Amino acid sequence: YDNFYPGMDKFIDEPQGDKVWSLGYGKASILPEDFGEKSYAKGAYIPYIFGNDMYTDEDGNKEDLMVRVVVMNDGSGRGNVVFIALDAMGVANADVRKIREGLKDIAKENNIVSINVSCTHIHTGIDSQGVWTDPIGCLINNMVSKNVRYGVERSFIESLISGSKAALEDALDDMTTGKLYYSQMDIEDYVWDRTAPISFDPNMYKLEFVPAAEEKTPTIITTFGCHPESASFDWSSADPDKALSFDKKFSADFIWYTEKVMNKAGYNFIFIQGNVSTVTSGRHYTGDGIDNTAHLSAVRYGYEIGYMLLGMSMNEAERIELNEATGDLLGIAKYSNKPDE
Image (cartoon, rainbow, N blue to C red; front, top):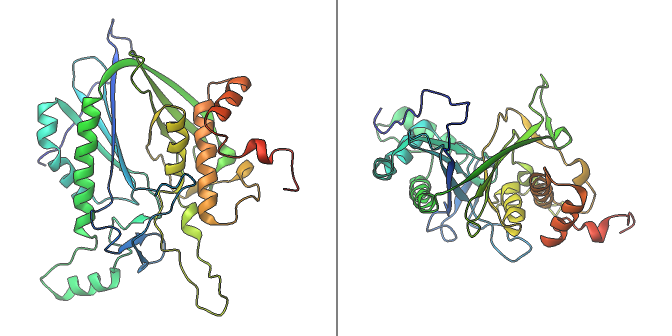
């Protein structure tokens, strides 16, 4: 179809002489311009939960729903490859085509041969699939009327397109040469499959791009299969005499807080969802009894993942130094060896 980019048909697995990697990074908000005034459906588990506010982190900043983009080039002369990660539950193929259509001029001008669009699969973002906004009303209308209704607010789809374009333009401007390092780590204690058959990849994978120029910011690309859904479980009401209430605030779940660790350490960050199936987060060491809400559970899980990614190839002394330099976001100094606090 129009604006499809087939990529490359040959996999190069040997060094190509003196060829080097190039990478550029960009990100942008995908919140609609009228968010805060107009209410949007939360893409969670229960339909018809509408809100217009984001959670605020401990630095006083509102969380945001983002699109993150990396452009990569292996130096072989075959062109640039684009990876886009949207803070959304999922996106229809028709809307992926709209995103690619919105990027076609940039792609032509910059020899882009592949545009890969994915979602972080957060369960606390704006409904991007039409399942939670008005599924019953849309179903009935589209069965009996020729005037088809969209399940997804089109203003949000427009934000996905405009945000992807802005982030891609920044990524292309950021393109620079450098070295690309690969590492992986078993995080089986931090992910688990909640339904049978129990089968999942326990590894977290990391590509770390280190620019040749010291003034450029390095970038970490990570992928592992895990539902960012912890923050979606605030389903309780403080008043037992009232009906069950639902959390109407939106959140980027652990993705926002993993990125906070990365940024404090001086890195760009993009999470590309892995083979998620029914795999979700496991608190393990972060299940420490300190936090008492689902959202705070996501916060601490995000910090933990961030520190594991950064410390994957460090020794103990380097990890201690990293923790202190980033502000000890998990409160190790405060809570360690103090079980009564």
